[in-house]
Amino acid sequence: MVVQHFLTLDDLPPAELLAIVRRAVELKRQPELAQIQARKTLGLIFEKSSTRTRVAFEVAMTQMGGSSLFLSPADSQLGRGEPIEDSARVLSRMVDCVAIRTYEHSKLQCFAENSQIPVINALSDDFHPCQLLADVQTFIEHRGDIGGKRVAWVGDGNNMCQSYINAAAAFDFELTIATPAGFEPSAELVKKHRSRVSLTVDPAAAVKNVDLVVTDVWASMGQEAEQSERESAFAAFQVDAELMSLANPEALFMHCLPAHRGEEVSAELLDGDDSVVWDEAENRMHSQKALLEYLFAQ
Ligand code: CP
Ligand code: NVA
Image (cartoon, rainbow, N blue to C red; front, side, top):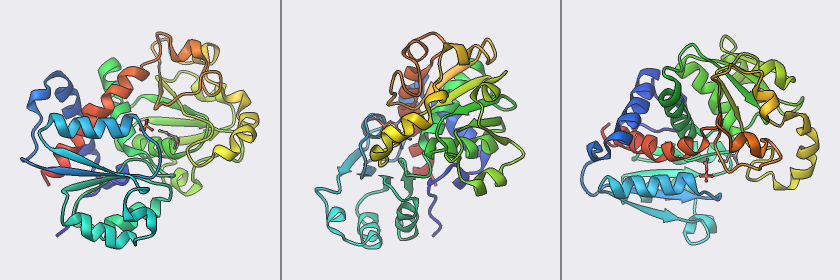
């Protein structure tokens, strides 16, 4: 039996991803249409903190008539060194799907290889595909089709940035990434998508005439010790009203949140009219409902 996982956007064909996003738009308007088979249970294994992703999954399952089970490593045998392979085999026999937030992406892959149930990446050090479903949904709701549009990523070449690279290919947009030297995303990933993705060290050049500007924290979870070093390296990479004024007049601003006002984004921009971050956060729930519907129907 081939199990459909969602570890990166590359796991699903572009047409299916777009269908999930369109379904999310529909479910937001008519939540009562959401349908999963009765009594489905979603396991949530989170080794890092979360507000949006966890709440979105838990509420999504409750509203669709299923249930969820939060497993913190501190309270389960995962935190005491039970092999990932064994945990995957056991959970496959009890729950119907599992969403995992962890550090090494290879841990997710190992779990998935030993799992008889779909595994969803709820964020790894390398990718955050669930967030991209919400971001694309948010763009479509505010501005229509994202295909053919121009997007700028300003900041760290992190998990979010790398999922934007996958999204550029899947949803057919042009992506310019501005990072300080030494903080670029995976060279292999950039090379793979070089027809749609370009790199620069100049934030102003990246945002010129784009339709969407996106940033994220300078130090991701697990990089707390590098905070001050990163604050210096990224000092010229804050997205503020002045930088945003170089984008198209109708350009939107997104941030997956949590945000650090005064670091990667100015308070004025985050809380201003160009920012759609609250819709983006809400859409995590609608898009994760659509994703769960899709995975349970395979
Ligand atoms: N954007 C996001 O994934 O938020 P959480 O860390 O709160 O889940
Ligand atoms: N890049 C951030 C995203 C948080 C949702 C992190 O990994 O901490």
